Length: 394
Image (cartoon, rainbow, N blue to C red):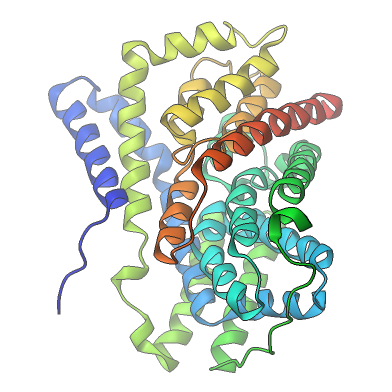
């Protein structure tokens, strides 16, 4: 059997981890600091691995495909109705199953739907990439940065959602406006109506039912306050067992999101090292010593700006180090900046990088200049609206 060649993102992930390990070996990052970073993210990596496996097998069980096709059927050829349904679907997947699920698994589903319904692919593709970032504010499970912030401010899932529902609503609303104006309206999509696709045929109803039920149970568990590092593995194991009994060939080591795990681990070795050699000082100057005064907007702007330079995860970690733990509002403003503001460049978040890879595989041409210009506009307006909503609810 021929081994799969490593892609560009694979090499970036491996190189980042190698760089982080070299920092520890050379003493640039003390072993104690490295251990502290790894200990902090270990439960998060367990959750990330489990939720990606759950989402991957849910896709294989056709749950995403059936839902997307049904939404197109319900829309009855009306683009405005389809727009509302697709943005709601992408937002819910991001909120409950993590932004990487939307970027990695929902994107190919939407791109496969496009030719069946005679829809231009870019509106659907932009819906998944933008909402994978901007809809990731509501729950801790929506984004790895949220999990880090939740542990920093010591909030439960419900408390976190209570603080972030207004910013999340503002961010999604602004995203929907930008999507409609720049990608979905008649002049951009190029057609008055689309063709409702035929009803999907479910290959294995048992697997479909088990996967759908596992997702529902997982969502219920996290809303009930269950530990995410327990809820996700339990749901994933249930689906794995079902596939082991009915379609074993779908199971394999390729389900394990090793690229994500390696990338995140490498980041949490590299970023603390950079912080020791000036990154924290730069963030401190931008944000201010304690986030006072206009520090909320400065924290959000710093997070958004740095995300589009070096990626949102290191941007959050770097900003977190210079904001006192007691200052919840500046810290959550930083979170808004790195989540909503990371849409201006292809490397702003790992989800966006993975989305570009899927577009390349499906031969969907992404107009990079338009992507960046509209992304800058969305980042500025979306971050500002979300921070204002946060301040109004504080």
